[in-house]
Amino acid sequence: MLVRNFTQKQINAVFRSSNKFSVLVATEEFPHTAPATKKSTAAPVVTSTTLPNGARLVVRQRESPIATIKFAIVGGSSVETAAQKGAAQFLAAAAFSGDKNNTAARTIKQLEKLGVKYSASADREKIVYSATFLADQAEEVLKTYLSLLASPPSDADFLEEYRAAAKLAYDAVNACPQAHALELVHEAAFGETSPLGSALYASDVKLAEALNYRNQQFVASNVVIAADGVSADLVKSVATPLLDVFPAGVATKLPVTAYVGGETKVRVDLHGRTQVAVAFPVPAGAAGKATAVVQSLLASRLAEKKVPVTPFIFSYSSGGIFGFTAKGKPCGLEATLAAALGELKAIAGDATGADAAKTKISVSNFEALDSTASTGKFVDAAVVGDAAVALADARGVSVADVTAAAKAALKATPSYAVYGTTAGVPSYSAVAKLLA
Image 1 (cartoon, rainbow, N blue to C red):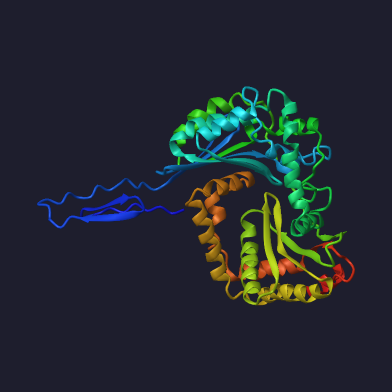
Image 2 (cartoon, rainbow, N blue to C red):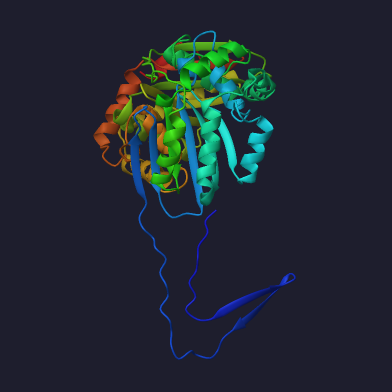
């Protein structure tokens, strides 16, 4: 919601009575007109600090009644062992289950008393606890969240009560064919047992294994705190002593996962319909900007021509994937895939519109950095080890860079996932031929 404060140069009072408004306007001029007092609008200042214990703090300090803080634990599902599969998602579901000094009920009561909008999530490279609140409550919010991160509930069995919540997230994915296709295309792109290709969701992780994962990952050197709308000095002064009592441990080095490409199929009954996904590699870091422009340009062209696909891009510390999903009856999917892949081939030959696409990406990224959404960008940048502003700016990408990125995608081994009815669906070799 956008709220603007308007300064009145004349007296203009509005009184509300019941459901009606009455307006009283002064018609007499005052002998002296006092100059309007300008509110300080100092430009936001971003500071980054690494504490001696390895914890990283990124704070966007600005005047705002609302503040947002994200507390990230580096790791996510990519560092789970086979026995720990599902631990990151389970711990995100149990994020507010309390700590060694506070029950879940007391924790939730405290957060609600502070007026905090709270949530937690997990992905392949991190677990994130989020808080949005009135800025003057920052100190108490920091203390409450860091206490949650520092230790599990005093009775670890309390975590079992959150298994149902974790299963809800798993069931939501299980009920969504598109989500299945995206999981399967990760498997096809990186390999079933690789850090980025293995399952993000699993419903049967044992409590002991989830706690083992927690003990390994919830250490000070894996913590990233990204804040917006609060004082950098406040964050540092409150967080430093609290992070010093975190368990000691070695900082996680996210595993490098090579893109391999390939095919994955799962046959299920979707009433005669099928969900497919096609993906190509995204280089890591700044090198991936040109590919991001390709993806944006591809999405625009496909939307303009009303090709029924949903474009996507996933970026990780060691690279990522981009492409699209499509759904329908098997007999109609080949035409859809041919149209979508034909546009990618067209970009490799003529990247007209690339300048508009890179501008659109930069505007979107900078807009996020200039809002409470900046904390998410700061966390993502910290996880991959780069500066948020540098990652946000795609203006340096040339048209030649875009055509080269499109050609590189076409030369790569494609990743192809099929979920649903498999009979009659375009084969992997047919998809590869469409790229020739």
